[in-house]
Image 1 (cartoon, helix red, strand yellow):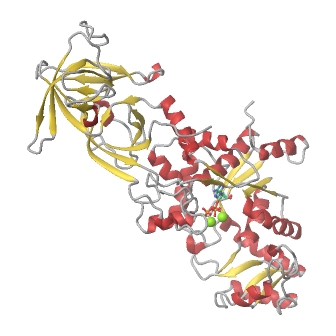
Image 2 (spheres, rainbow, N blue to C red; image 1 turned 135 degrees about the vertical axis):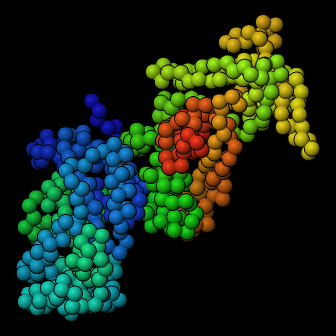
Image 3 (cartoon, helix red, strand yellow; image 1 turned 45 degrees about the vertical axis):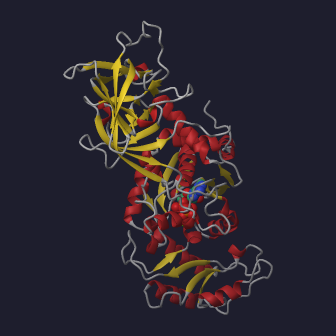
Length: 551
Ligand code: ATP
Ligand code: MG
Ligand code: MG
């Protein structure tokens, strides 16, 4: 039984199927292609595709492309890629609201013929005045009583491009006194003389979200049309249109609480601003909460899906701790990512007792519990690198690493003892000279003097230099866009640190782009999807090792 623990929509679908109200569940994920998808969309994707999957139904991918001026084929392509990467496949072809533009227009004519819609000449400012307020009813437009013939003529001429943008709209004729503002003769069509990425210059009038969405659902036979809570007040209009049109099926709208994450901005418009103003390197910058950014950061589809399951689906908006998302990632990578060694602040160690031309082929398990992940080769020779922070000339007992005159174990290799240091003109230690303790491969020293700790290392023989990017949160503030906060001023100036000369163990250079690893004692890292190559390795930090999520 894989019934999700906390998902009220799952129960609704189960009841509808049990009662025979629907025979097969059909859902849809309906993004507008006006930006890249973010983590909030991941919740909607997991919900819509997940419900279809759970009940043997289908889920469509439909582009809600009714605002051509903000949309582009680049966004269309990225959205398809993101959905597939998350592991979902839509039913049949990708759909576009624009596929149905002629049908919408025919239905608009139908409404006009029934006396349920009219062409209104009020300008935007007048329309606002006539609309009233939450406490005051609106007033009827002076154009509300136009007869059917005149409305049909004007609508046809709107479509033919005879009128200026903003000079006329088509409105539903519902109720200007309704307490629900959405029912005060809402706009169905507006004039926009812009080319469309799918339909070119075929149309110069475009349907509004409200006139398009429910009808798209009806055309596609959607049974459960799931949207976020801010559309609750649109539901009466959704139903009104379905009831007043000869649509082929009867979809129903359900609302759920959107995902908000602390330290994160989830609005395409704001994310676009970060891209446009160069705060980040693009929509898929690993600091971005976009699906493509999380992908490049090294998050896995499995972990994102798990996170969406953990947060559940309820009818209230809340703020989820980003540490919970990080926990899901860490959990997944801990289980699945091979281990490797990387030295971020290299300090050279020369083993004076070790012959210069000798290289020993050591090996270590790729993972502490996953034997199926096999072994990795760790060549060992006279010169190697350790982290500068793992060495001190003098230290107290709390320092469990390498100290002059003391011993430390090189992980998966020998115990060594530090003998002397080489310094540069400024007095900085640039090299440690040490010797190995014989017989300590897998054994304690025979003389009983135990090493103080275990540190990571990379051999100069076979090891490679790499670029490693370390990331911190993109925003310093917990709620960067709440209330009066200006998210652009709350960007963390230290969210990216580039380490140019890190040393990585030999196998890491051959990593495939997007391969995940745990760099022991440092965190989880991924070979950069776009810039990593064997000749010039590049790794991105996914997340540190320490879990900060309070369950
Ligand atoms: P944005 O405000 O970021 O532009 P949107 O809702 O306008 O988001 P759409 O492309 O219309 O973006 O969204 C596609 C689907 O994803 C919609 O059904 C929408 O409700 C859902 N969605 C968008 N943001 C979230 C979120 N934060 N949490 C859950 N679902 C979301
Ligand atoms: Mg939207
Ligand atoms: Mg939007």
